[in-house]
Length: 69
Image (tube, rainbow, N blue to C red; front, side, top):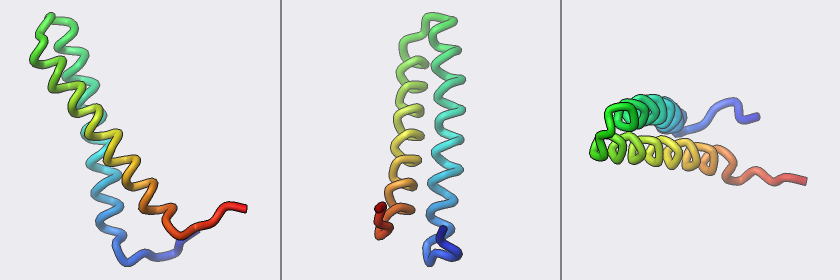
């Protein structure tokens, strides 16, 4: 476990931004499907994808340099 990183704020922003984007994406997708709005559904799916990408980038960055046995 890493005690301190030089870019800790960047990792925190990616984590919180990713979680926020996923929550907003889920809500927009649900509203879009409920009211049969293609545009809202599309924007919701884009937010879901953006949130997933931010979380994956955060995980990749965190695991850089660590070796698994």
